[in-house]
Image (tube, rainbow, N blue to C red; front, side, top):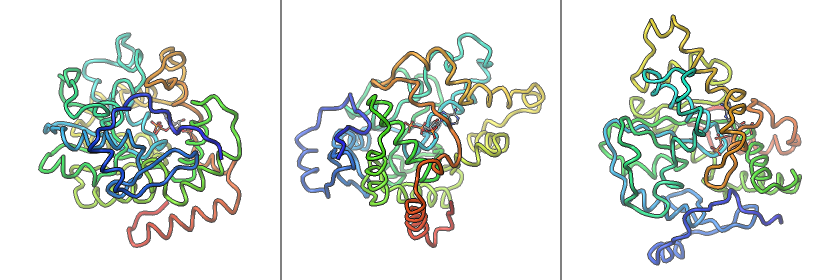
Length: 327
Ligand code: PAP
C-alpha cells in the first residue's frame, strides 16, 4: 500500500475532545492510502475535515444572497469558481482589466471552502473578507449535511458533477502531483478500489451526486445541477443556465459586446493555466498549477482497463437506479 495523504490538509489539526468522542462512535475505515476516515451523516471524512464540518454546522449563519458552489473533489470545482467570480465581477471588471481578481489569485484563493478553509479551526471565523454581497463560498460536503444549517435560507447552491471515471483519474494525477511522486499504477489501483467501495474522501461518489441531484429536483430555484461534460460540450448554453439561476442574466448589450465569450475565455483551462499566479503560487500548500491539467472528457480511456470500466459502470448504474440520473 502506498502511504500518502490524500490530499494534504495543512490546516486543521485542532480536533476537540467532543469531536474525538464522536469519531470513536462513528464507522471508521481508511482510504486506499491508509489515511483514517470516519463516516458522518453518510459521508467519509478525514478527521480534521469532520471538525470543519461540525464547526460549519454549529456556526454558519446564512445570508439571503449567499451562493455556495458545491462539488465532489476533481469534478470541475476550480472552473465553476472561476466562472462564478467572472460573472459576479463583470459589472466592475472586464477580463482585460489589470485588477480583475482572477488575474491575481487562484479561484480557490478567491472562493474558499467552508469546511476545509473557513470553518476548519473555528465555528466563528472572521468573515470580514466577505463584506460585499453576494458572498461566494464553496464546499465538498453533500447537500444533506448543509440542509439543517441552511434551513429556510433562500441562498443558492450550484453543484458541478463529473463522471466517476474521469473524476478518479483526475484524482490520481492530482495526488501524485501534490506529493511529487511518480504516477504509479499501484496508486491508481488503490484509488479505484476506494472509489468502488465508496470509502474515499467525501465518498461514496454516488451518494454525493444523488444528494444534489435530488435536491435540484425538489427545489430547482435554490439548487442547480450542472455537469462538467455539458459545460465542455455547450459552454454558451450552460453559462446562461448558470446566470439565469443566479438571477444575473446577460443583458442584450452584454451579449452583443461579446461578454459571454470573454468570460468563457477568461475562465478557460488554457487561459487560467497560463496566468503567472497559477504557475508560481500556492494555496493551502498546494501549488496552483496542480489544479489545471488536461480538462478532457473521457481521459479515463487512456488509463482504466476494460474490467475497471465495466465494474465502475455496473456500480454507478446500480446505485443510481430509479433516480433518473444517468452518466
Ligand atoms: P478540486 O476538487 O481539487 O478543486 P477540480 O477543480 O474540481 O479540483 O478538478 C480538477 C479538474 O478540473 C482537472 O481535470 P483533469 O485532471 O481531468 O485535467 C482540471 O484540469 C480541470 N479544470 C481545472 N480548471 C478548468 C477549467 N478552467 N476548465 C475546464 N477544466 C478545468
